[in-house]
Structures are given as C-alpha cells and as structure tokens.
Length: 305
Image (cartoon, rainbow, N blue to C red; front, side):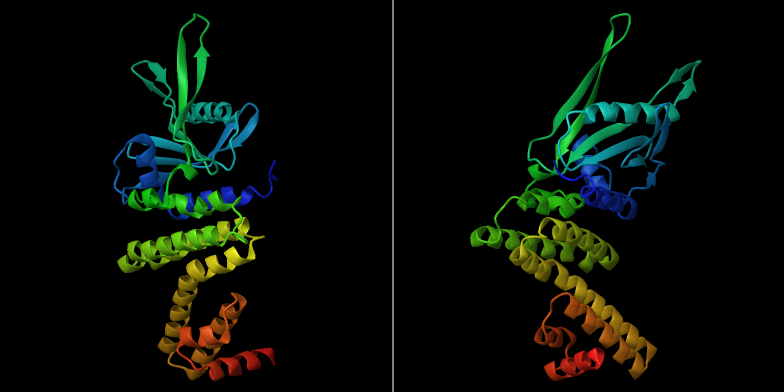
C-alpha cells in the first residue's frame, strides 16, 4: 500500500486546483453530471469543514453553482469503503443546508462524485441501499470517475484541463528508462499538451492561469518521475521551458521598466541562476536570453565569486 503521507501531494494539487482555478472544474462537472454550465459562470466555494457526533470531517471540495451544490472527492487509489464515507459527508452537508418548507423539513443532498486518479474504467455508480424500519428503501448513488479513462484527445477536446496534472500517473508503472519508444510517446503527448495550453491560455492573455496549471502539472510529474531521470529531464524541457521563458521575459521587462542598468543586471543574474538550477546549459541560457555564451559565463563566474 502506498504511504499515505505521499498521497498528500495529490490532495494538495486537487485542492489548489479547486481554490485557485475553480473554473477548470466546470467542464468536469458538466462531463460527470450532464450539465452545460459556461466556464465563466459564478462559482461559490462553500465551507468544507463539517461537524458530526464523531468529530469534524473535511471534504475535498464543495461548490455552489446557481442553486446546486457540487461535492467532489479525490482519491489516488480505489477504496471500497469510499462510498460509505461519501454518504456520511453528504448527510452532514445536507443537515447544514436543511430547510423548513411548507411545515416540513427537507434535506437537500449535494450532487457528488468521486474522482479516482488511478484506474481507467468507465464512470460507474457506487451505491448504498438504505432500508427504513417500515421496509421502504431508497438508494444512495454516487458516480465514480476514473481520470485514466480519458485519453489526451478527449481531455483537450472536452477541455477537461482539471485532469491534466494527474495525466502523468498513467505512466508511473511504465519503464521509461529502457523502453525508448514508450518515453518517446510520453514526451510527444506532453509536447502536444503544452502546445494546446499555449493556444488556450497564453494566446488568450491568461498567462497566470497557464503558469499555475503548468506548475501543478510539473509538481505531480516530478513526484511520479522522481526515479526516472531520462523521463524527468525530457519532461522538464517540454513543460518547464515555457514557464522559465515567461519568467525570464517578466523579469527582464521589470528591469527595463525601472530604467536602471544595475536593475537589469541584477535581474539577469537572478534569471541565469534560476535557469542553471533547472539544468539549462550556458548555451541554452544564452539563446533564451539573447546573450552571448561568454556574457552568460561572466555572470556565472561573478555569482560564484
């Protein structure tokens, strides 16, 4: 079983997506529940801490869109008991939103789903049959969605960008160090993904959104590829290069706007240091910053001194 401490990286990235880029969850909600919300619809993030007699429970997300509540939980591995926790979460949520209408109380369960980061099954319904003392029954059902079920083409076509940070997980058991064809396929996929994100975000003036999403993609990839040096290097060159280029442009422009040679020089030192830490060679840095290799070497020597 995977160390639960390591799983926090997936929870952290999921929650960061929800908190910083909730608009990316809209196409996923549309896909799961058959809705057709526009991506710019107002989203209200509701409190995800709920009190029960057993203590506090914390849900991964709780979003209000129009008059409907959406509850999404993220699981890195399959868990047979997850549906039990889901009904507990949803019961607590509905208790807090219970209303008295026409003289009687009504509890409104949220629209809920489990997102499994591993596995490639088609969406299926998990359920619990609730039997009342009088023999009547009702069935609690929650869709389980598997990120690995969606191909790159489907993710990009359906704008399921929310799933992209976790896309690399389908390669975690693939031998990318000795099977060069597998590595080639993976890198080609990410080259296409990066190009598509440039079109969808950068060309639309959404640099912050692009940077945030790519940094989350890189964060998960660095974890999954931590023991795969070739794959990690190739991946970093594809997905990390544009982020570094954007950062370089921003810092250089900042120096220019200050109108001070000293400011520009200091910014260049910072940029060169960051690029070196990312594994870029002197020649690559020179080309990226429109400098000569000799100028870059001088900055490197000055920094060491």
